[in-house]
Length: 95
Image 1 (cartoon, helix red, strand yellow):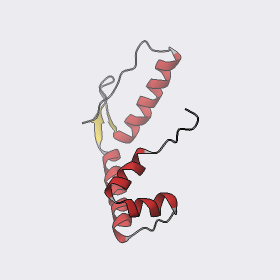
Image 2 (cartoon, rainbow, N blue to C red):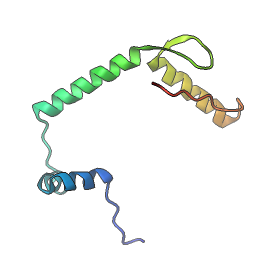
Image 3 (spheres, helix red, strand yellow):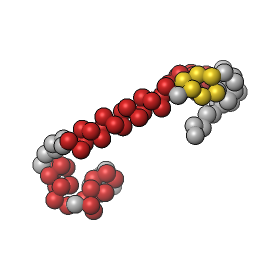
Image 4 (tube, helix red, strand yellow):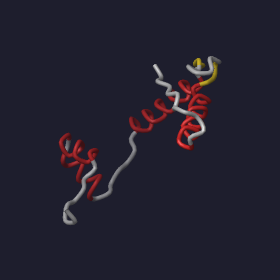
C-alpha cells in the first residue's frame, strides 16, 4: 500500500482527452492561460456573483435573504447542529 501512487481524477481525465497536453501540464508544469480560459473564468465568476445576489426564502425561518446570506445562515446552523445546540440540521437544497 505504501508503494501505491495516488493520481488525481482530473489528471486521468486530461490524460484520456489528450496525453500530450496532460504531460505538459502535470509533468512539465507548463500552463498558459488563453483568451478562452480567461474569458471563461470571468464569465463564470460573474454568473456566480449574480446567483449569490438572488433572493430566496429560507425554508425554516420563512424570510427572504440573498443566496450569499443563506450560505452564512446555513453554516451557522450546521455549527449549532454539530455542537448539539439544535436537535437536527435544517438542510437547504437550492434549485
